[in-house]
Amino acid sequence: MNDNKEYIFDERIARYMKGEMSEEETLSFEQELKTNYELRAKAIVMARMAKAMKSVGQQDDQQVIDAIQSVKASAVTSMAKKISKPSIKLSYRRMSLAASVVILICVGLYYNDYYSTVSLGEKYSTAFVEEQSLLRGSTLTEVEEELKALYANVQNGENLKETIHRLSILWELSTMDTYNDYTDHAPYIGWYLACAELMNGENDKSKAILEELLGYNKDNKEFCLLIQELLEQL
Amino acid sequence: MNNSYSEQILNKFAAKQWEKTLAYLQNQFNLSRIDCEDIFQDSFITLHQQILSGKLAEMSASLTTYFISICRNKAFERLRRNGTTVLLEDQFPHAKEDSFVDEQIDKLIALDNSDDDIIEKRKQSLVKQIVKDLPSPCNELLWAFYRDGFSMKTLAQMFNYKSEDAVKVTKHRCCEKFKMRFEESIKHLF
Image (tube, rainbow over all chains, first blue to last red):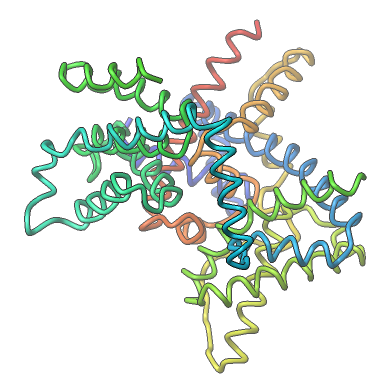
């Protein structure tokens, strides 16, 4: 099945569910549903998803509405401020005290577990430097420029949250059946995403990506050995 | 409702709204971060007032859609005060009405032809479990499209995709994954 046809299916199903079709279009679509198994199967699943999301979503929304009704306006204001301005200004003395407490707690309780995960990410994020010859040229495409910046973020441990979000999207794109700008970069995108998740303390997410990478790169024995080496340490 | 539990729920909701509101306001209106922070905070106050005054009683749209509509309106006000005219063609959903029509959705589900109520209820329960457990970025994208009713353009702005086509591609892939997971899971129902 070609992709354009799939995207057209998606759009038509959504328009039907939103009641955006003309009477003529609706009749034609409903007629096609009787004979086109693929369209019908997809439409049913999408409809089920939309219905479930509405049901679950309404329950969740009601919980939030009830919560808002039960708190004071001042609590709502300070909560919104806290979420949108996460940096807290402390006096130098408080900052020193806070920093000391944090260090003690990390060393006492969390050091081994957290440090080993993050340091694994840091160590393995430099494993691919020699393979990135295509990103070393002086004339890189827009895609390559972006990837270069994202990989550098992972290696330097910078802007991890935004980098992970962007790499997750590119990982999805690069592993699609349809060839696109990111397909050739899939192994590196997956690898850096896995390392970034490790550096973010997300072992399970990293493992899932590494396992997927193993599946996609069966022919590349060296790469598989590297992935397995990292997986064994998780 | 216990206060600390209420605050937890509220914090979770606000945290979910912040990143996408910030991205949407910056990309759509070219506002500074400080302006976006102010709009976000003011919008929560407005939301609180409107809930207390019962204005949301007849709402079928999602709370996210309604909240971001408030942010959008406040962005317009701010730009108008600064003398900037903004003309938008972003197909923004209706603030209070659900974009998806129940009757149309039910017609499609009826094609699944199960006369057995128990099987139908199990299918419904299964789908609810799956939608609560979607991985990122599918979770954010599918909920924003099918529940919140946002257009491809708005989704691209909210989640920092390079283009509407990139959103279309990712959404399609997410739908396929959802379909596979659903079809695999219903095998175990029988």
